[in-house]
Image 1 (tube, rainbow, N blue to C red):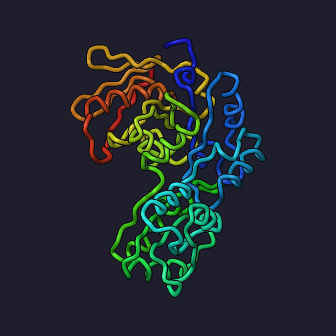
Image 2: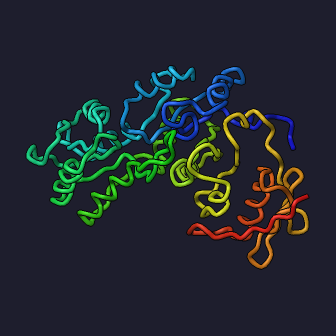
Image 3: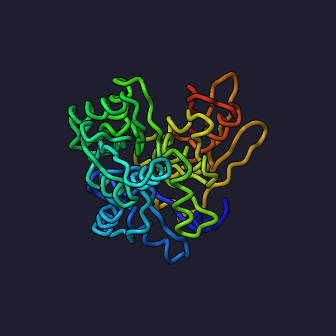
Length: 329
């Protein structure tokens, strides 16, 4: 184990929000303090979010209410990415139907397009983003326009949204409803596409960022596609088991309990005689079974298991089904 904290390897942290900094209206324990410490160690901070229901200024204001450091321009959202994409594809002033929030409509206006809210206004495109107030009639209106051949852009396709009471349906479920009705698929502007992460890194003038997220299919996949280091935290959607089973493109470089572990040395994983050792735990794969010597509660044991399983399955195009055998030390 090296003595330097993990965060010292990077010049910026690109943090997801839901499931990393907060769940619902409440900050995750230790998150705010961890974000505040970044300035003292010379590491810049940016927030990369698929939440399109609020403007970046509103997101930053909420973060400040929680005590986290946040300027408006530190927040890069999928609504901005969707608006930029539409501005590239459409003529100035083109009408875009909003299936989402007022914040999304505002971003569309900022890039010189015209937000509208019904098929009767003859939009040439639909942009769909999360809004908890969306109803059947809104999805139906989007389906009418998309079905008629309009360009369709989704801010993101997150299937779930972490809330204080559990997981709630995310924008992906609403997008899926329109897709089912029309037989069409949207272009996706936000995570897991790489441009959103590249834009955040450019804002921070970062050359060595680390992407920290709780979701493999958005945060980690997008960070990997961008060519950045990635760390999965266990405070949101994905779990130790789902991370172990991840397909190759969604595997994080680091596995952390929460943001506080950015300030701890990251344990070295060493391969010895076809076994992988991390801390006091070891893991090896034989005949499709992962045998782990260590406690199931010890995160190092899961790190060792991931190293062993991923080495045995380097090119997994789909999530795998690992079987584990635990041998308590």
